[in-house]
Length: 451
Image 1 (spheres, rainbow, N blue to C red):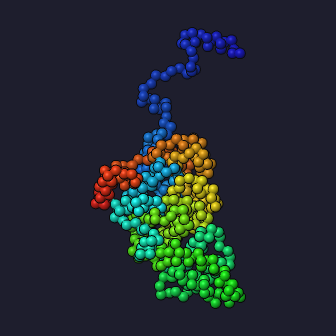
Image 2 (image 1 turned 135 degrees about the vertical axis):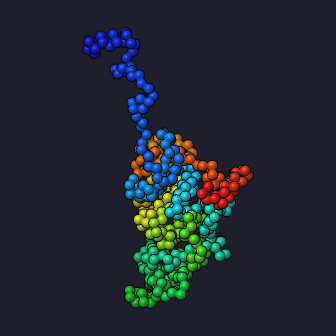
Image 3 (image 1 turned 45 degrees about the horizontal axis):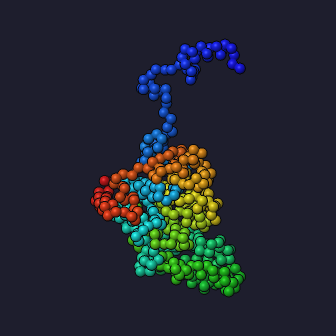
């Protein structure tokens, strides 16, 4: 029961002024003075150095992001994970981000383009607009003189070659290499490196050495010729598939000359490879290791390695281990790894859950486009997103995403310029007018890259 005096006061005040809504008397002020009364509540941004992504939805501020500017200050690692359902803007974000980064003279980008239509990769138009020919990796084309990448390229260290050979075999077999088979491979590799000196060693040399082992290694272990041949049999059969089987042509010869590793944009077109076959993770492993030894150099250039369909890497424990080393090594030399994945469940529930978790921890930047509610909740748990962000992910419109930059969480609308639009949207069902517009924009960019 209210005190009698308080009740009397409340009744008298109500009689004079009506129902009491607040104990504070109203304040008359101007809009200019109100700015000091009602302070802005927008969270701080990431600074103004880097590339413009778009606008923060709630504050309307421009959103600028650059992992190289933020690394060591606001970011512990420059790597980036992009998630979301198809058709919500992931591809447009990647392409405009790369185009805007390339305006800085010290930037260089490699794209593993695993998607495409009409016989070319999704990045074909942008590459052509910049005067660059994509490096198409295609078993059929390779048989007719197309591009080859040699796992035994002398540019790769001997340790890197052996690690790559083990990964290829383990991916193809779907299990770890046994100790005896591993020794047979190591002995064959050492023999080939020691004896093939007048040309690039190739996979066929390893197969021949596995079938006819070096007697020196046999004598050192005190085992029979039949034993070591048996140990290396499965290894030889797997590698034979890359030489004479359905994967022949791409890896069974010296690396193709003329691959320009100094170009600002390097596109590996993987769109002719069956994305559900073992060829895709094997191919990504070979490209990744080859780039590690030939492309990443201590020359102060900032490099971006963007991988479409990155679940092929993260979901294979053997390939993921190679890329873990690449990410740790490349971080010191200015490498930002961008992994594009549709669903986080594609990687965290797979056979490489431990390796996937390690790679995800290296990605200090996470961009999440629209996902269904169940997937959004699972993503939120794995990435540690705040509850409000998880709740809005299923409601996001195309082009809008939740950005988590080392705990700085914002909702950002991606903005695409009119010049970028015809280069970014590559849907098959384009009108003739849209195709003509793309052609004009491509020609304009080729004539004047600074436009």
